[in-house]
Image 1 (cartoon, rainbow, N blue to C red):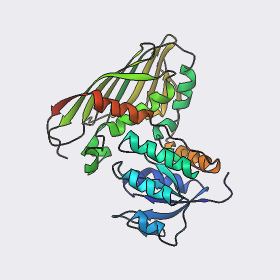
Image 2: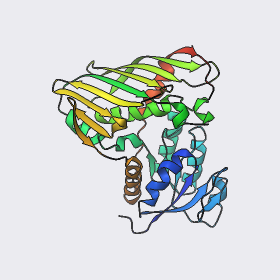
Image 3: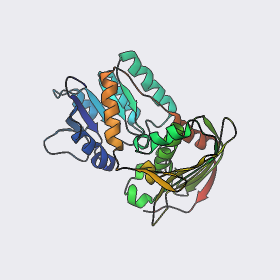
Image 4: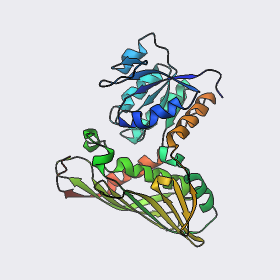
Length: 310
């Protein structure tokens, strides 16, 4: 455990910061929320700045920043923080491009600072038990269904439809972060169809086909127009039965039997990992989920979809 609390600043105070980051920080006594950086919101009792450069030039002392902004401006902010000697946590996706994240990795390493790419879904309670169960089994097929209502989960977030905003891959990358963790072999995109609304820049639906290093088929369906019950499910057929992760990984099933169910503690897991990285003078920079998204944009066939109006 660190000797002193990590004084951290939240950069961006939108929905994800309020719903997840603030409760996780409040529940971990290794952290002190020292400042908020936001153009549109503040928090009672916490120093507030409208720009990161103003915080870094102030007399408010911080050790780290957690970047909760949309991905498009994140490289500039992260580079600024690293240049000022601060550890950096990157909300997912870690950047708008792979090249940006690689530059940040090299910068952090050169300065001896911690950089963490956060994949919160990997901290869902069923993920590690699923990885262990699959490690010595023969996998035959993988099916991913990640379908949610964008109007419920991302209300008013126009940035998600801009170039670099990822569209339906913003939630879909959570599924990719899980399967890149639990499958024992790497896998590769073979084809994709991206449905892009005629008035937007990013897809609202996507179908992806992958194959792993020994030919196991992996399919994924991502949908931002799902109403009614939401679907965050991964099914993996093996010679020893069907493994299913449902509810984003909070439930683990084997052959229809519920093996594990636990409440959401994903962001508590992220901050626990970040504290350990800072204490150990280490970084964790994994871009494998983002690489699959980049491959989809590179290889995917684009289909014009009806206009999306919130």
